[in-house]
Length: 128
Image 1: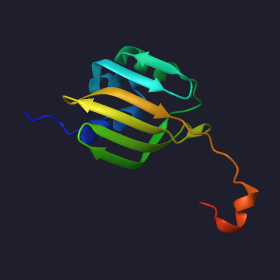
Image 2 (image 1 turned 180 degrees about the vertical axis):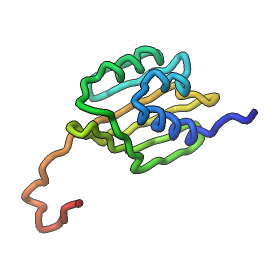
Image 3 (image 1 turned 30 degrees about the vertical axis):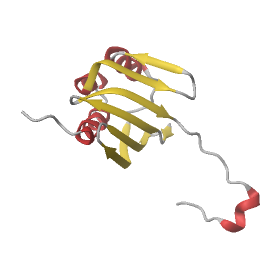
């Protein structure tokens, strides 16, 4: 049986996340999986803790995920995903490392939206 591409593994990760059965995500995570959030200085070790963190995250409804952009090269995949539970919304940038058909590392950045600066108003247009 041939090994899955890194891109197909990451697409399966987001498909499983969208089921809201976060324990199912373990099927694409390596036993040595590590997730890092550099902005808050946090690291989660292991698939079990990652899945538990997602299952315990406060939500008002089911999470919905949409892949806006995916770039893959070898064992590296980067995604820009929109997610919402109907109340909360975010657009994380996620850097995946896939080895032997499993995600071994995930580094995520969760940028906060901000108001446009007045000094460049004459140069920009709003994104709908």
